[in-house]
Image 1 (cartoon, helix red, strand yellow):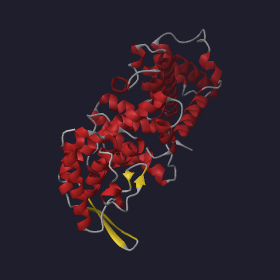
Image 2 (image 1 turned 60 degrees about the vertical axis):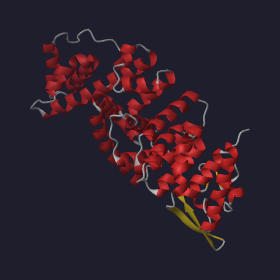
Image 3 (image 1 turned 45 degrees about the vertical axis):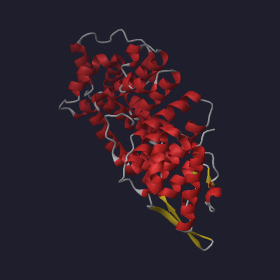
Image 4 (image 1 turned 180 degrees about the horizontal axis):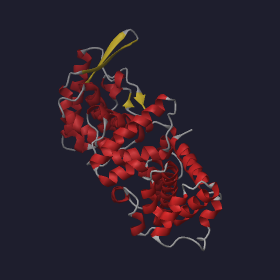
Length: 389
């Protein structure tokens, strides 16, 4: 049973335990409904009656009053009588949940700005990602799935970061228990908040996001289906998270950017190539990202990589050791961007890859003689391109 199902059952259970007839929720207020604060407090007092029917009737009337009974119920939740405390807390939960559902319904039905602004996080969400029927529908699903996270982002980026850290514990426990699939609305909420510039994203959340973005429900939303607006929205949210990646998180972002063709992957790719301290395997995928999504303006980032002899991988192929260096990957990328066949430049073991253009570990040479010959041929090609006409 997933988290949303458990929450729904809890709410239904609360409503059932407080009301003897659910249909009464939509009925008009009874003629003897209390009209003063004193009468409301009297109803709260009746929650501790020895007579079960009196207790149930008082609970029913208080629930119908809704938020007008909140002050009296909150006071009753501190009562010395345990029964009154217990019932007040239950009724408050039901009232708040019913009000929450009514606000969500109004949000969907009425696009009026005053209604929308009542939902936590909406102003940030709308400003960054837009406003339409499909967007509001997804936002309602996010409110149901992760209300605490959205309340936190409404407060501040710092509060959101703390809420993310707390939420990660529950999500990690779910994964460890075998409950790997999370609703798309949970993934969307994590992506949205993690893409906000004032939120310091905990590392454990980045790992969770990476895992969630490989799940079928997310993959289907971002690549398949007929809802193009939802697809575009998920791409924007994923792009926002990818753009913020540094180091190991950037590496994960590069993988997802190439998998889903998210051009925001160029941002962490550029950071990695400009940072001399970035690890070789990150530079390797940054180069391939630039080759796949970049253009001539990214050429200055790749040219210095032709002098980088750092080893990325080494693999034995047909009893021959093939070593891939950063400069080899950069050369293959430049050849691709110039519509040249790398195999004609000595990349004998080259294998195309649907996600990374080429399988990275095969982007190498058996020895430096072949590597240098390939570089010379490339430089000759460059010189030829510089000639007039």
